[in-house]
Image (cartoon, rainbow, N blue to C red; front, side):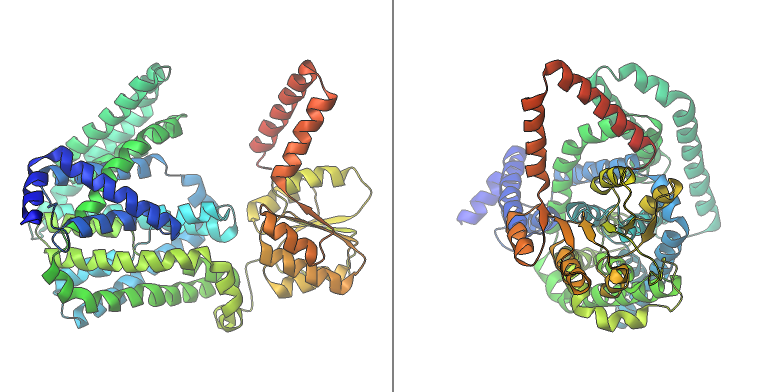
Length: 571
């Protein structure tokens, strides 16, 4: 009785509905943060708890559906706005091959597994396609937290995700074109013509008008904010009128604004708005999960989740071996994509809207999302430890001839080995260049190695987490080793291997953690650099030895040098 009264009150008041949704979402998000889980899971569970499965005090409504649709539009608008085509150029061929092969093979297996589980052809097509995509939002966030975006595997992953995003957008267009439940050449041609017309309009606007118009509004943040939303909604509306989905229009609106030099300013202003509406979208997915649907799809959801986690991992390992990556790079790329994407949920939601699917399929994919996103988060967070654990078994996924640089150092001699040539490492390089000591720089980022080689600096591409590589590296018997890497396991291995060849040599390592600092000293490090502590000391030195004028002068000089090095791609 009480529950029924609460349901009546909440369903009659949008404000109360939104209030309780946000309150529960906040509480669950805090729990998710403690458990190191992405907030998406908290939002879906909010809907499950408030919906027909548990409390039954909130139900999907037209307003909630509208808010959810606005959330998807903002999400795709910002994805379009933040697209970085230069990333795809840098890893282009590899990312394209990995992305497309993974999609094709995963779709093939996903379709036939779905058919074997008793789903119809149309349902199997949707399921097969939905499980091919991986979460750009989750992967990029976790890679950023681990400072892995600029690594080789990080760059390739971002490129692969970009390929997946493009295929997902094409899938949304295809679903829209088949909205009437049938397909014929005439309807497909009309949709293609309308889509191309919209793209031409966007290209012309982007090239000739948008930059000028938005330049007039740059001085007014409020006007810039409103104009960006207006442009997003305008293209979303045009797409809807053309028979396409509003999501496609929003995505094109975002892509068109990438020509504006301050597109990231727009992105940062609209992010909070997107975050609010996207919460409603994921909550709405949870609200739409029915008890009967869950009971009927729990076994298929578990089977598909196992395939997404293990099947996609094996598929990527085989593709990576074919391309020629070392086992660590291959493993880290493969391990990162073992979940489904926000696009997967959007795709089946759109399929439901155009009557291709029923709630049973959206419940199935939502469950697969909950399971795979939860598990993959921990797999990505602890990928280095998992690599160490499974390293010996991964050799079968590594070809003999590798594209990564393998250099024999047996006949070479170096006084100093520098591990990491980016930012911190580059400042060390500038100092070492002035000395008479012979040094070798090792880095895992191919762009860093390329820039250093252009400057004539002796350097090699190498993976310091590879024990065989470290053993080979220290055959040169250096007197000093400097590690700018913030990874405890790697630094401990570096110390151990260095002490085998030079017990009296000097070794510097870096960490951001006080507990790790103690561990590193106890295991033989001569000097452990704590960046925040060194920064504080440097500021104190400036205050002790320089006056205001000198500090300002040095600050400007420092700023100019940083800009110069950024422009040259050195830091």
